[in-house]
Image: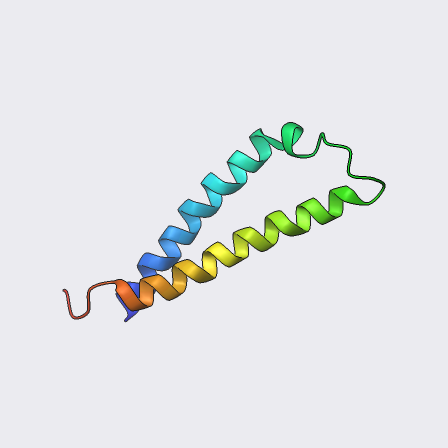
Length: 71
């Protein structure tokens, strides 16, 4: 169980680095659309929500589908 969790935390770190690097590199494209006066915080909220949902999905999948009992 501990090995599954440590693999998951390593994947969180790698995924987060890649995800936020891609967001920062394409932020001009993402935030350049005219979304009104308060569109930018909403976009950032959805990006963060998507990131968080993917992390939770990864946690569930890693706990369920990683091979059990492998040493």
